Length: 303
Image 1: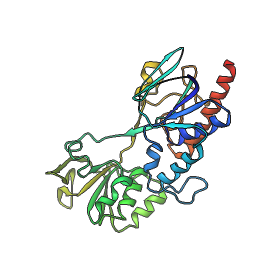
Image 2: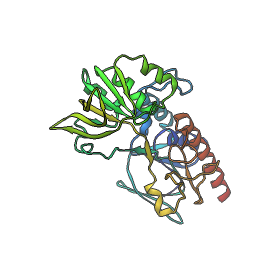
Image 3: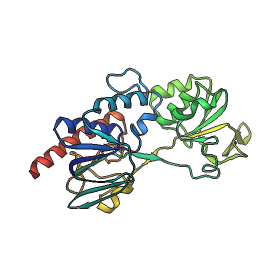
């Protein structure tokens, strides 16, 4: 069977593309390794229209509910993507063929690549406060980073941990002003600026980190947990065989219609150059809608 469209990625961009594809009567389905993507990990979202405050998981479940019955979602991992006339998508569960593709596979978390980071993953080191915050009740934890994700993680962790340190390499954290204000008024949170983490230390579990500068006259900071929130990198490894053009940072080059340099291949969400400077759920959803419309026009031109 040859589908009209296969959407790779089940985050905000992918699921919105699916909603619009169904409205255009496009024969499509979604392949997503993790339904909701990284958006599902968000502790609290307060800037998505229609929701004064909602968790990332709750919002992504609303997306999923809306496409249920309209477009199928296959929870599989894509291992290869190629073009042989039509596009061929190979997963661990099967081989699928389509006339067009929208890739919305998002980004993956950037790592510090320091001593002990890998060894203590799951033993104190985490990349997801939403997933693991409850395990650190009455503990002392650190958050590395100064972006919105780091700020959200610190605020969530402060509801469980007795003390939260934000460790940031620059002078001031660069999160949204409202979140910065909440952090500054939170007595459980302390910001350590102009400082890097050099190593994670411990035995069976992590118990401290080594800093490149002294804090309270010591380069060793006792911590029960370390949450790493230093940004993300685009998941574009699948596009290499197709010769999809990327920018210097590895994001997929798209035009205003979300079209790539390969005919019939579109991209949407955090993986694209359009979203690189402002990665938000609302903009990812917008790109997904635009991409689906572009696919509709593409298929119509072929017929």
